[in-house]
Amino acid sequence: DAGVIQSPRHEVTEMGQEVTLRCKPISGHDYLFWYRQTMMRGLELLIYFNNNVPIDDSGMPEDRFSAKMPNASFSTLKIQPSEPRDSAVYFCASTNWGSTFEAFFGQGTRLTVV
Amino acid sequence: GNSVTQMEGPVTLSEEAFLTINCTYTATGYPSLFWYVQYPGEGLQLLLKATKADDKGSNKGFEATYRKETTSFHLEKGSVQVSDSAVYFCAQGTDKLIFGTGTRLQVFP
Image 1 (cartoon, chains in turn yellow, cyan):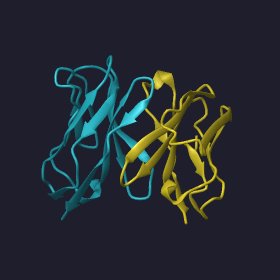
Image 2: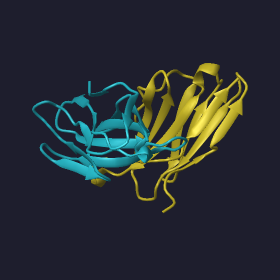
Image 3: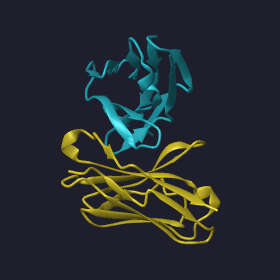
Image 4: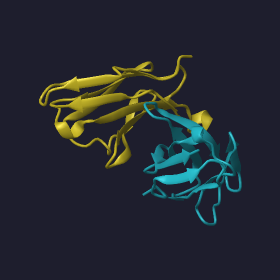
């Protein structure tokens, strides 16, 4: 397996634009997590899915953020409209229940909102 | 709620020095505990894990022991190398993975 694949690796956008981040989890994993990493706040859990169903989105900062998982092999995190304070590295990770939550991370998407 | 607290960095050491990075957790129940490492420009990688009390996780010379009585999972290495320079994250997992803030380790020759 190629591991967790995220795209794009880098995204630069203007304030007010819509941004969509993509993630392909490892095949067979039934949990998918979205994290945001900044210097100030560290690694924050935004939302996670189990079997494509959102379980906990309490970490999503506000209504501008939304996430979907239409099938077991794809998830998106959307920010609309984007703001400069959304600039961060966004990570996707996947795991399965049987592995006691040994999560595998993607390379991350570095988002810069100017 | 569940949380993870780890010592702030950066931790600066000379090569071959002894390393300890402290980590404590709060949890309802008995989570699995992890240390992840992040090298520059990369995602997090699992370094080691322990799934129950008194378990010792080990990998690449790093060790950590699951201490239920002190709710701790401190990371140790007897002799660090320059290549160990990275950010280290402690984490707990029950129904979700919760991370500490990370500790930057810098090792100089």
